[in-house]
Length: 378
Image (cartoon, rainbow, N blue to C red; front, side, top):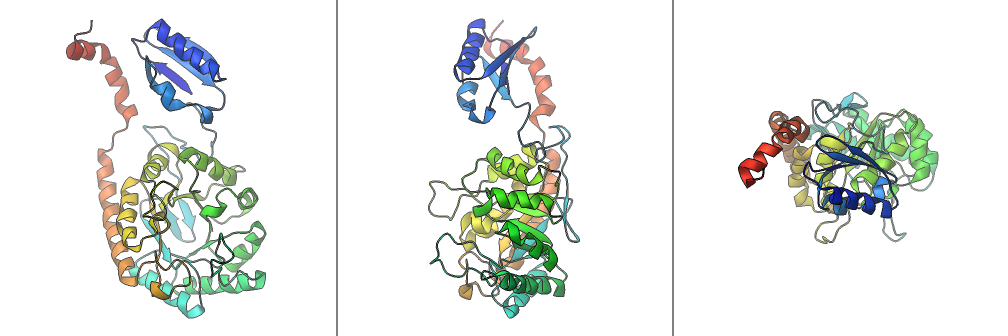
């Protein structure tokens, strides 16, 4: 981290910042230029009270110079970002087209998942999702999925969703809970593995996923801040895996009306600043309110998502899990149409997006003249 001092910062202000940083246990290197002073900060930057430092007298801004999540991080720069597409079977994610991944919370029967696949295909979505084993925080929560009993039942459940996906020419996305099950998923023909929110910090599972050739959608834990989440994503990518997709699905907050609070600021940060990986938005879990999935999915696209993950069921009123947030078929069709329209609008409007880095140098050169014009400073 670099603390850039204002061109008009006094020696006393510089000394105060340096003393503060040393008191916090950081090493400090001072670089004094002809116009500004820079303070290099060495140590665990994640523990640095950045807001407190940024508000101290004489500080112009804080500049991150390296990130612990090097593989998940943006490989380009602010003027030339690099975004890397990921393939889910024949579907390219994070490229020029929007990807909608839809389906029921869980695979309930052969007829149900076949009807779900038909619904998803007719709506215009590109991938079929569905859980075969469902994570439950309580043993009394109910349905845990067709594949929850043993590996034979897991295989049968996976066979059903893959069969449905193949019937309607859609690759399948299925959540995985146990690292020992990875070969079962790979052999079943599943196209993409999903790490759900409860397993976002499951070290054993994430380590095991480094070795699978299948792409991984890694959902953000609801207690993880923006960059802490990327460190857990980094764990999957640490040995060279590249085909990972980020997913914002809501964080815990004081809000009780929605199931979670969908963090659209982080969606934008992932896409425009922090990472080159494709970004998905899951408003189904982000809100838990069926009628809010439509507007929040569209907002996620505008914020930077190129993937929409959504739950839908042929009849959500009889769904065995999460029916309260699953869309009716008519709602899914409307969402896909609107999402494609919003995607086209975003692609057009992004031409007007100008980063601070493209303007800052010019305005820095005008600071002295502007202070004189605006404030009468000499």
